[in-house]
Length: 140
Length: 140
DNA sequence: GTCATTTAGTTTGACATCAAACTATATGCT
DNA sequence: AGCATATAGTTTGATGTCAAACTAAATGAC
Image 1: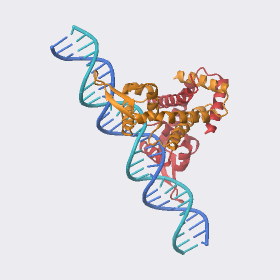
Image 2: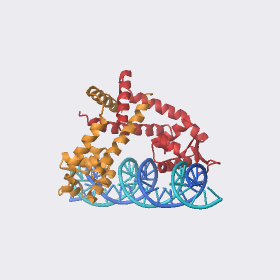
Image 3: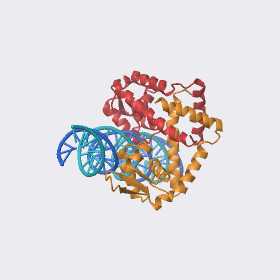
Image 4: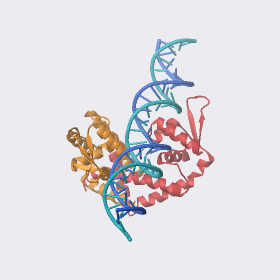
């Protein structure tokens, strides 16, 4: 029960959350998608198209990582890549119809996750938690 | 500022913590060591020798991952591997003299990390944070 | 005592990830 | 206009990670 344990707890919780998400997706028949792929798809629900650089910034992953992640999503048929006509360096990523079908699945997994995550946590605790974590985040 | 953000914050904080640790180690002249290697060495400060299975359990990583991590530590000269005479399936991992020299470095990095992490966080907040995170952890 | 099962660890194959080097294109300066 | 610089993405190489298959050794049931 030392203060140091908080850091370890944070790692472990993150791990549990990731495993939960992947497992729930598999239960709903969605295979081969990790949390980073999910982050990309989630971003595309809100913005119909994003460049590789946009995605990199959004999901906090290196651009070369994004190349690999998006290429996998293309392979799985969830998104498409298209070059900009004017600035041919730019690539736009957008959801395919199959990708759009994931939205309700994501919604339900997200709901289940939050229900479990916040089980027996009061509103005040939720608020405190958010405030404290934000302070810590800004310390770095 | 939604409740959902907490999960994303946790991921980001964990990422920051890991980067901080690795960067501080490099500053102190220790290269090639990631946080998982650090976890192994840290465990060996407290227990003079551990089996591969012990380590796997301690650091929450697959046993095959532990094989790779420990082999790297052997290559870097920080630990040694030795088979048990009686049960030759078992391998003991222990710190080398070079590995033991890391203890003060770890101490100082750990202190710096905690100082930064808890900057401007009151004792009450620390306690609340630990309690809430423990509850969440046990939800999974 | 022999055979099945369990246990400890390694190997293999796949993939996420990053950093550095690279390609191609656009922009800016003169 | 022409060259230097900046920007967008990809490729390459290294590493951490897991799961599944594998090897070797110990345990247990009969």
